[in-house]
Length: 476
Image (tube, rainbow, N blue to C red; front, side, top):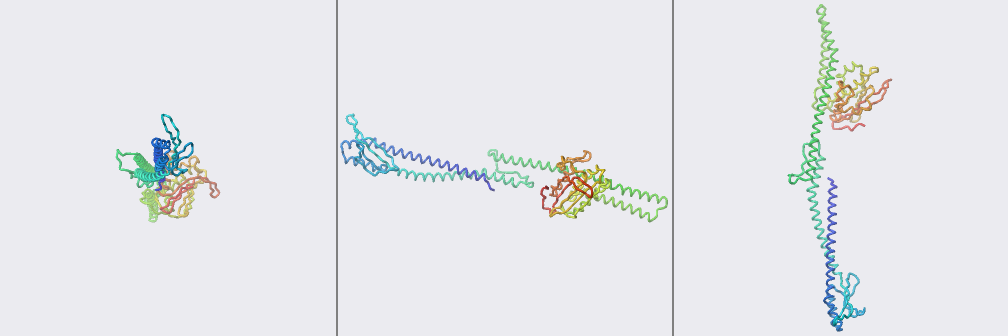
């Protein structure tokens, strides 16, 4: 994982270590320099205190040999490189070689006291060479710098090691857990350290917060699934109520025909007019009507039979089954169906798809039955485009109000009277298309022309993939 915070922390640790090391090296070298310089000052001060009185005696006695020995002894000192004696600002004696740089120069007055009377003889000029001290300081600085760098590296690496073990690794583990979190492994809690109450730390607080969030999410998902299950059952029950009404409509005519035919058989038999041909004709009519009733029951039973698995099915067949369930309502309300359906296959639960079609067509029917002064029409267009199937269902009922059209897929939202609608039909329609069939659904008001009629109505667009592994992107 690209952990840029870790890189920044490592850089910061090295930067701080470098600054601390630099300050430490500077302090140590500066301290050594001051100590060496103080040592020089002390040595030179000892010359004034211990050597100058001896020199003054030799100068007073004008003992050139003693003076020369005295000066040579001073120069033999490893720190002093040049000495001279000035009398009346004139050089009278000198020993050693003079240089201009890396030196420290001291002047001491030479005084002779006789009978408490002070006699100024001259000055002793002493020049000490600082180059050996600087060389020693350089060597010491290299040693100090090397030692401090080793210390810095050891401390920095130790800090980085413990930071990675105690902070970076747990954070990376949290990030990996978050990246891999899905519905399949949501039950697995995040575990960072084998902790006890004694070593409970901030990372454990974050871990507990993530696990609490995970548990809340599980509870919300369970509540959502339970809610969706209840809505699905309500939608199914509402559809069942619609279907029972359809059964009543579709059975009325065949039951009436059976009743009339049976009465005719009885009457003709009582009058002695029941001939074999008439009996055969009457029984054929009864059998045909009974078969129609049986076929109708089979259609409704198949619709309510739960699908166990997804499969490929022909979309034209699904529409035909839907029409057989709703046909009586359309006939009784004089609603015409204008169909242009391409016979293509899609993948999913066929009965759930039929429920979608029933919900949309029932909404169109409910909107149309209030428009008695016009021709009532529902238009259905189905065609394939690439790997997708596009389904358009529209009516000429005038459309949905612009203020509420964006809410028609919300649960319990309905434009109908409370006694006529539950507000879950279109919500379940979207749930089935989007979540179960990995498709998309949208609705809009459209103006269009049919034959010589100017029409306006709500148009539902559904896009479903023919490929079971493909998910449709959002409709524009």
